[in-house]
Amino acid sequence: MSEPEVDQPQPRSLRRSFAALVLVGEIFVVGFAALVAFQLSDVSGASVAVVAGGTALLCVVAAGTLRSPVGYALGWLVQLLLVLSGFWVPMMFVVGIVFGAIWFVALQQGGRADAITAQRQLAERQHREQDQDG
Image 1 (cartoon, one colour):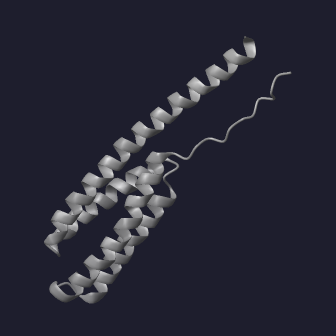
Image 2 (cartoon, one colour):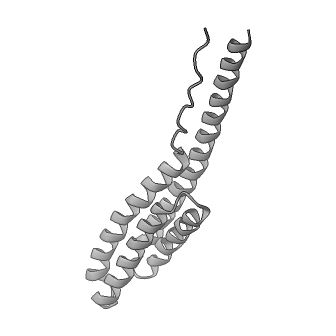
Image 3 (cartoon, one colour):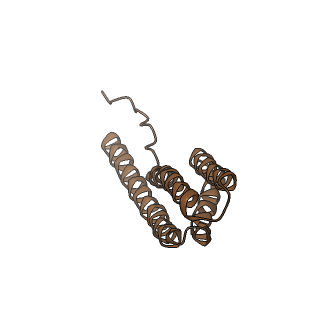
């Protein structure tokens, strides 16, 4: 008697999970950068609050839309904005570049992990089919 075939749920995309983690971390970075900008920048507090709030909101929207390519495009926009924020808080040039590199690595390694997972699932499925036929 053969076992009934059980459809296994699709595993979560590690690429998407890694990207979401980076974006959530960047919300904190934006918040801390805003605190520094309030103290050290000549920009008005209201302007800092609007820009920081908008960037943090963009991080949330990007993380929430990572199921589509739009989310990744918004994520790249966040990376650009973090680097550009260095014009108001010079240390943000460094922080933005570091987080841009983390974003890049998260996407690359997450994609690689997803490919390995897909290969493993295919091999398991083929092995089960061979066992059922043989």
